[in-house]
Amino acid sequence: MRVVTYNIHAGVDGYGRANDAVDHAVSLKADLFFGQEVWRGEAVDQYDEIAGRLDLRGQFVALGTGDRVTAEAGGRGWQSPLALLRGEEGLYFDERRELTAHQRASRLSAKGRESGEWGMALLTNREILSLDVEHLPQLRRDKVSRSIIVARLRDEGRDFIAVGLHGAHLTHGSLLQYRHVARRLDELSESAPLVVGGDFNCWRPLLRSVLHHYDTGVRARTWPAWRPHSQIDHLLLRGEWKVTMRRSSTGPSDHRALILEATPL
Image (cartoon, rainbow, N blue to C red; front, side, top):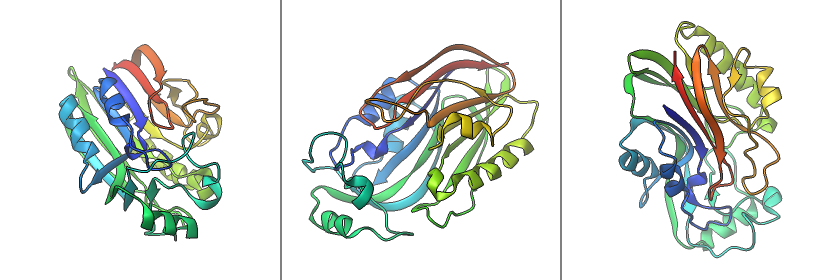
């Protein structure tokens, strides 16, 4: 079974230039796909596209609503060097936090803008026994909400559990959410193998201080994709698994994808 986690940044860069991140996600040919920053808009539905092209089924969870820009020219690199100060120009969310003055002006003048939902997905071609969405406590500084997707699946007669998430940044207090996630995962059946996948926005050593007793499925730097210095995307394993391949993959997103071939035992 091929397990993939990939943050596709809604198929645009920080300037709002469209790219082929969805094509790259499809090319990885996942049997179990954890997708983050998946966009469902007025003109584009990346969840349906990935599911349809790979013949997968599953769950999408909207974490926020906003605007996506797809036709800007932009500058060099992924986004403006000033993006950390004035905000990026590809995606806009103002449900919970106000946009900067620069973002308000750039959104008004943007070309190719569409409204929609920004969220995460769990998709699979394995038998689905159950699918549940559980909302996490809201962080005051976070611009969107957060949830986990808990799926009970069956692979060739062996039941296992898959959990997908997209965590907030550490500066927003995500460790508080991960403590909640750790308690929830401890409540799940300890007899069934478990895989947790997603963009945690958290370094592996710090994450392991909260999520104990998990093996690292793939150890690779994932961010930023073009010259990664940190692993903030993870595939974590608990229980008995036979792993036959682990690697990362560079596509047009600002995150690298992680790919794991493993069988629950």
